[in-house]
Length: 266
Image (tube, rainbow, N blue to C red; front, side):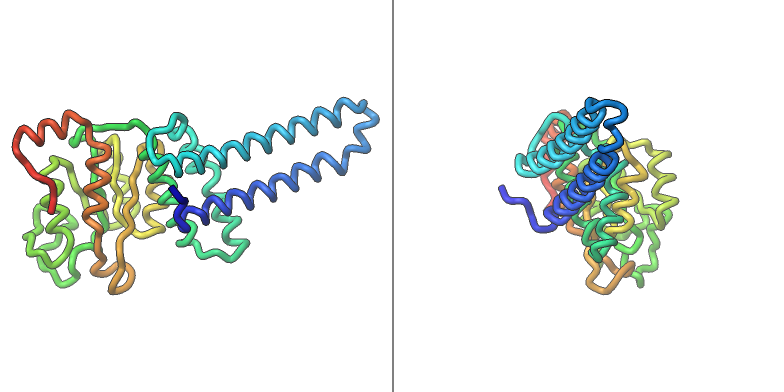
């Protein structure tokens, strides 16, 4: 399996960060090394080994991340690595990308795909009632008189936007679906629902901030398409949402669905 170009961007930025980090450590070790003679040569050797150890750990972390992406299935430690990526490395990578003139959304798309790989590499399963689909309001047609920002039950399933298929899918699988009109409301919904897994549908910026804000809850991110520009009449790849849900639903849930004779979404 090859690493997709979009994922290579984030890996490349991690390697760039490692090189800058290595140069910084070398300077910290080399320049004052002459002064170490006053304290004995062993101090210089100690710092050399300490800096070398840090670089080995950094390199192994990147190799581990690449291995998870290439393997594409359960890998021990993926959850731990995702925590480091979300909490500590993402802000630094965004700064490195800014210095290199790389558009923010390019880095965010790369991060979202790698985050999805890390979540998929865990052995996580959840019952449908503990999974939440979180959608932006811009998926609904702007001329629709039946606003679903209060309740998705207002959808008349006319088929003019993707809420039609999304609603059917959520009903079939018994999964709650909520629409959020902004980041603050999305965070409040997550606190109230307390899900074990979130399938988030949004743009690059909102998905990235949502993944960070809701950590350690695993989030699978699905990017919206914007055929008419940002924040208006956006579209959703329903198959991707469906695949994410079926990946993380517990086997018991599928058994129950099979017993009732329900079929997959068209």
